Image 1: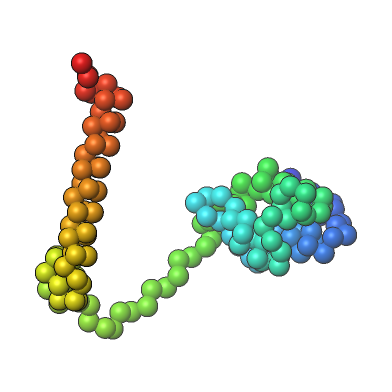
Image 2: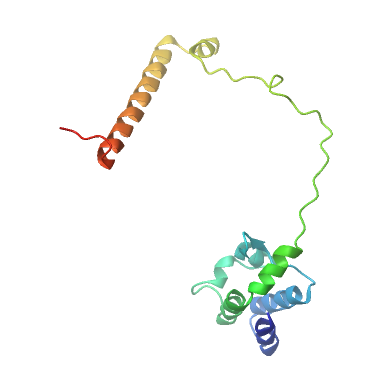
Length: 158
């Protein structure tokens, strides 16, 4: 983090987005802000939102060289800052659930049997088609499993 801090204090970017990124990272180093992370890595989308730009500005040919240089320095030298931000972030407080939760018995059941379809006034020819489709889907699944077994060598065809 010292090398990142030295780098950030030694530069004076002319690009406004690079200036905002530099200022935000200095705030993160000083503890005034936290670096947005996800799964122990920098969340570039959230970081871009913090400095009011698109995350694609950090990569390729979209952003300024100064902005990409600062972001690259963060990726290379910012592991301590990432670790500090990850440990400093506090979980959101949970709201108390004052409503009664439904138990399994209270929940309405979705009945997808052919009888329930009849209740919805689906014509009988459509019901036959639905039955045929479900039978074909089952047969297809069986055939795909057999094919995979043959290809993997579990079944030998003579």
